[in-house]
Image (cartoon, rainbow, N blue to C red; front, side):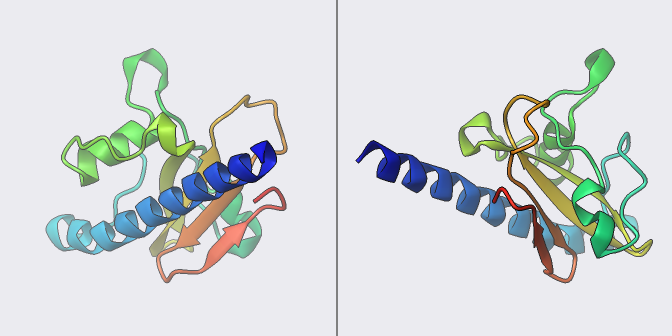
Length: 136
């Protein structure tokens, strides 16, 4: 019963994260309309050139170095009017990077030890293509 419950909780957290990623994608249209460009986390990697590096487009985090906002906090500040959408309770941190130079990609990584290479990591492009590692 415990394994079944843990699977249920894990699946629910993953689905909540996917829903947050879809909300971010919808808000990108409004952000583009207001600013002339998509929102990207500013201190992140240069983005992804295609599907082969989609999961490594940026590194999700909760807090940044030197007092700066982490990628998840920055998304909440810029796109959700400081709303607490990406919480530790959903179990994933999220970042946004450029994709193929003219679009965006949203990357989510399961909260946990950064040295644990068996964490779920998923990405969604601006045109709703999904990529997941083997741990999802």
